Image (tube, rainbow, N blue to C red; front, top):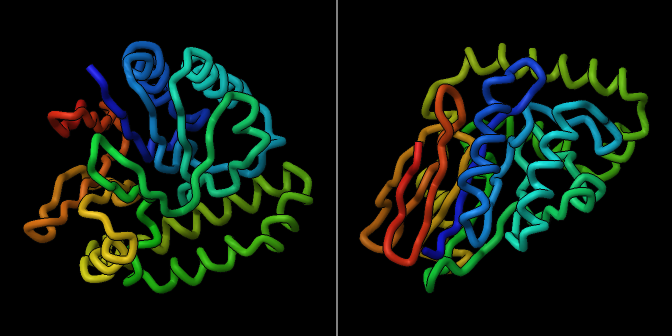
Length: 235
């Protein structure tokens, strides 16, 4: 059966071998059965540059390469944690990088995919931060720094982000419904698939428009399976 798989928010790190084990199991047993795999951001818990090497990075690249070499298309869209993942990493394993918003044809339905953080416009402090770190000159400057310094900066940002979240409401960290509909109208789609908020669900926004939210990975994996006949979560 033809199917496309969507995942996001795995937050892989050396500190969570359980998540790595879930990813390896998925890549070896489910991904090979798909036409295409879409990773919609935050594959890694943080990313400080394609020049970083580790056992985890090597393993992830090996797993992705194993399916792309079988002719299965694998797409990646940067998240808020791994937005610096670039072409060097992608070329190593046959990954295809996508922009912040991408329209795809899912068995006859035009579907917009994105990580989801750009839809959370009520979190103004985050959006200001996002605009800064996505400036190309800032990214080039950061990537020129020694790896150890980049790692220290990334850890400081993560700690600050965790502290900031405690001051934010649940509504503030979720997508803005009106803005989300505007984005869907802008791209002329009736379906949106995104991650980031970790709230796995399928929302009927209007009689014509649906929003599908991917869940994060924890005790189980959150995998969206789209076929010609159905859309289901496989947890």
